[in-house]
Length: 24
Picture (cartoon, rainbow, N blue to C red):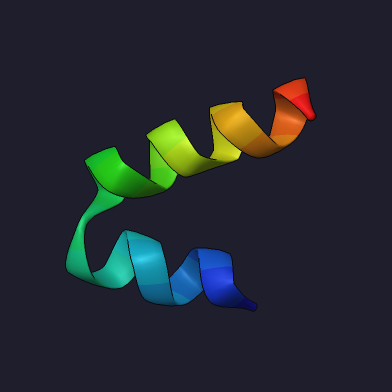
């Protein structure tokens, strides 16, 4: 899952991306 990769290098960025995906 891409989420794991994102959270691995930057959990904060992953949070922002997850929020964006949720909105769409």
